[in-house]
Every structure is written in structure tokens, then in C-alpha cells.
Length: 118
Image 1 (cartoon, rainbow, N blue to C red):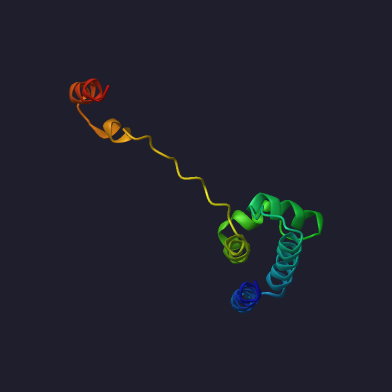
Image 2: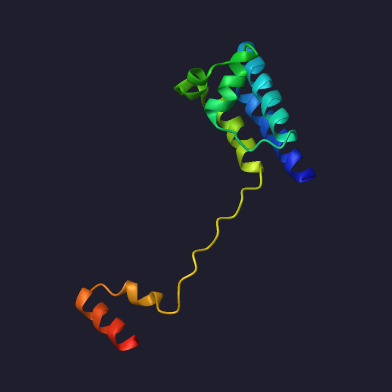
């Protein structure tokens, strides 16, 4: 987790250096603060709409400003946080013993194979 925090900090600093105006830097700092709070509370929803809604409440850029063309730095920062969380692994669909039969393209051949199996 420590390396994840270091990566987030380094990415934030790199994104912050790309910002041209003081307003953008303040907005990035606010979004970073929001994302950090979300991460520390165990929240896994780092969607633009969620972060944008919280940002709007705190006086930062709204969802539209984050989504528009000039909001690419905000999106990049949110993406860093979203990628840092452990995503639940989706269960692998188990195929039954004769699941391969479904892969046969010809319906006639598929029917004949099922008939032979049974």
C-alpha cells in the first residue's frame, strides 16, 4: 500500500506541474484531497460524476468541467486513484463437462454430438 501512496503522490505532482494557472492548481489540489479522503474511507467509487458532485459541494470544478476537453488533468488524477484500488475479481464462469459442444458452429453437428453424448 505504501508504494501505491508513493505512486499516487508522484502522479499528483507530475499532473500538478502540467497545470498552467493557479486556479487549475487549486482545483487539482481539491480533487486530490477529495480522492484521498475517498480512498482512506474505503470508498471505491472514483467515477467522474461522484468526484465532480463532491467537488461542486466544496467549491471546486463540477462534473461538466471535469468531463470537458480542458478537464483532462482532473480526469488523469481521478484515474490514478481509480486504478490504485483493488478491484474485485470477477468469478470465472465454469463450463460443464460437455461445454465444448456449444462451440460447434453447425447446429446439425452440435445436435448429433449431443445425441452421441447422451
